Image (cartoon, rainbow, N blue to C red; front, side, top):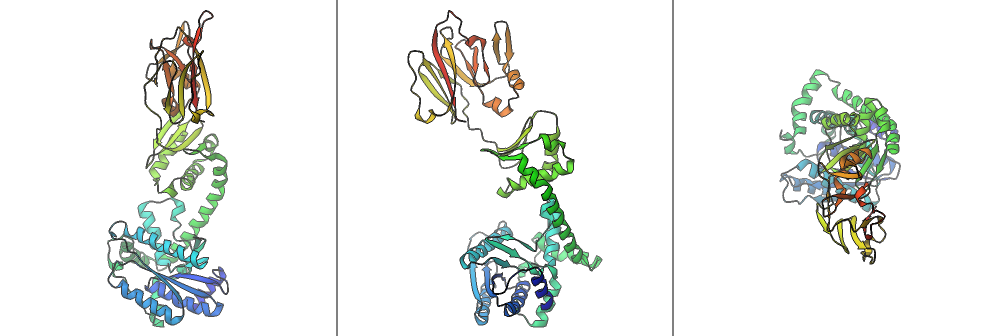
Length: 460
């Protein structure tokens, strides 16, 4: 077995002579076989081995096991690091939290000891369990590849040289070689899905086909290659179409709509993986299918809630991925001469007379400015509020137009429509929609005396 293991590692350049390697050793049969084989490899290639062990304190025996491993490493002249998982409540999401604790510890050692390679003892049975679990739970193609033989980790990489071996092969080698190892009694419990797969499902599949594990290995490799091919097609499109914004990300839709459905689906999967999935936001296949329909609908503006406050907002030929955070005030506000008000964190409004300029706050001096001259015919105080259904603005002496129609004509996104301010006179007539429309009523006649200047400033 050592010859097969050593040749496999050398053919894949898992290490170089005189290299320092970190081994994750739990004390179970898999990791103790790894330690034994790596001791032999270290003699051939002058490797420096360092063992890392985590005592999760989930079993009474774990203290004794950690002590044995410490003494073993001392006898063999192997550097040894250990750490106890001392968290008080270990009853919820135990597997994931324990794994995170372990790998954080391994990363710390790698940085401290300047080690670029971590080896773990995952084998082909682990691979089968992982892929079947992901199929049962539902997973994207990129996640179905299962356990990769090598992947980036910390400042270096994580290598799993045992994926070519089954659990049974490792157990036989341990028995033949007289290797001491410890059985974790929790592995016998069917509380966890992984254990149910291990005890109830995989044995049946092995009976159906003795080559089941090899087929799983081949399947995983094919998935890996397929995923690499898909990413080589999708990534250049992502770089062209997607931009980071202050609120999240935006994506151009015109080219995406022209792609085949297969490209659209894998693009969306890649898009979410690159953006919010890494932040712990889950995207289901049902949501992806719903989003595909939404993006291809002719309606110019649509919105879809995802999770944790994230939204997809379609606005004509652009789709935005953003948090649903409304950072503007509701109003209404009222304004008389020489008064001012912050409408939101990024908007300010002031009404000054032609004879006396208003004193503007220092913070808005460099904001973009828009203004409207007002005659004495406009009665104060002015009312500032958001739009309401039925709002109409006078465009000429004989023509009024719905404010919403103006927004539609200008292709103003729904979110901006909701944030836009409507400014009315004391007679409840709309005189201005800053950035979008001036009322006929706000245009001073030649005989009118200009009394005021309305200033709207926005941080862009």
